[in-house]
Image 1: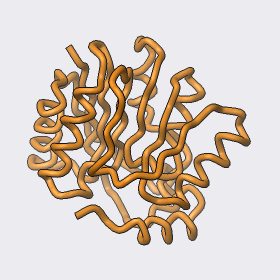
Image 2: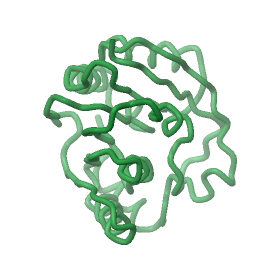
Image 3: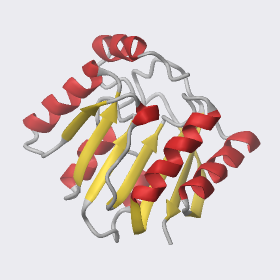
Image 4: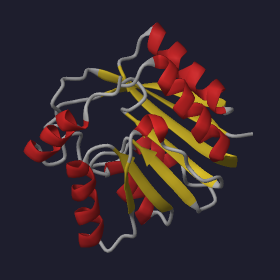
Length: 191
């Protein structure tokens, strides 16, 4: 079951930039050659990745169940004069329109039950255009996490381009409510 919206509303109410204010650098690097168009940041919370995609010229929707996180993302987008669509939705039932150029699932797919995560990945993969990028990051770098990432990419219909271990330092995430030592980050390309 996805953690309740109430828990994330509390985290986002109490912490400015709970997961840091910088986008994942691997995500930004992966998007340099991607044709601009529509993108979604699923479980994007306060919008750290969505705001960066909007600044790069993508038409971005940040999808989350937390009204507090989405309110902060919208306020930051307005302050930066960036177009950003915020959608409050139960992520397990979100159905994107086809034609996506990028899908971002940073620190999301480990929260729902595996079956739900795979259903969401399949739905997003079906909406992703050929040549589009499917980006995932998960806490931990274990054999099981890497296998789960590979399963997500396969379910989404994407060719796994790379999986990396990223060490998260206190400087990277000074206000992270849950300590993390590393993350598995992966990129898939829709053939």
